[in-house]
Image 1 (cartoon, rainbow, N blue to C red):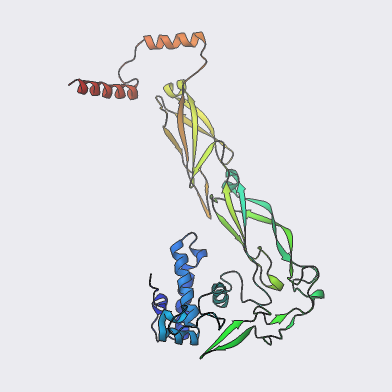
Image 2 (image 1 turned 90 degrees about the vertical axis):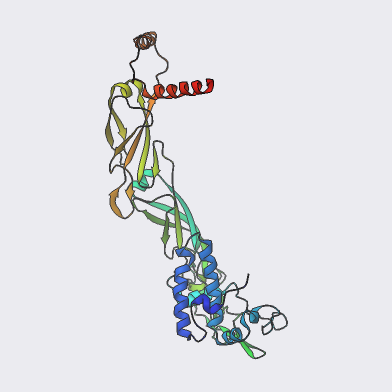
Length: 381
């Protein structure tokens, strides 16, 4: 499939200024960022495309090559391209492109900032199961997360005794080196300092110069009332520590609601199947049912109640996240046929059966067998 024009991807013209390109990219990147479109493959693909487009158009030399040769300028063997091989470079969008562009423009949005002495720490995921009652009322819980933490010996700097890093001799502190390839000047990240511009002369013995060590972190997590299965809680900078003092990543708590022995949840509503004795269903009466808040509720059962009949208890369901409202509770009647009858009970039921049933006493069965009778008569005809 042919690639879309980079200017069209960003919604700009070929005469757009650097500021116009930057504004267009910022708007689209915010719109299609994976954090704002979880699980959306189309948005993820679009995000990659606009990053690739901006990576080329923000660089004057790459933009000039693109304006002249189009996409062929960056394909192996293309008419005007910088072919990888003898020259040791190409213009293909590399693995580090997303991070470099996004750190430059949206450092705070992704929880980091510009890279300094090292790379931003990785994000962590922690799966936490909570009870339905805790999801209803909210709670605080303690989690223990294996992670990388700042080294105490060097205070996260990576240098023995906390000494300050020195300027990188390879790039003279610039963090980048330049190489000439034909009429192009290629700027690449310094391989010695990895773009930091500084190097550690005497690495810390405790952490090997990384500025972080493996530890188990204990955290208090607040679960708000009304959370649902799959809710994600983000704890900023509680993920892995960054290399040599760089910002830490984030910790994401993914919640799962444990099954309940009585209740089934449907959004903010609670469903409960309650067995009702046959006599209570036939003659009417009251039953007492538990509620999610730990209380009890009385339900009036009208005479003639059938299996599947629902009773609604308004505002006795789940809490709603960030709202004072509550859902409803639905009681589903399950009429229970008695078992293990005594002889006397059997006699009474036989007497009831012999007494005969007036029309309408058993509407469900009467209606069903009436239809069956009509079916048999139609088959005879």
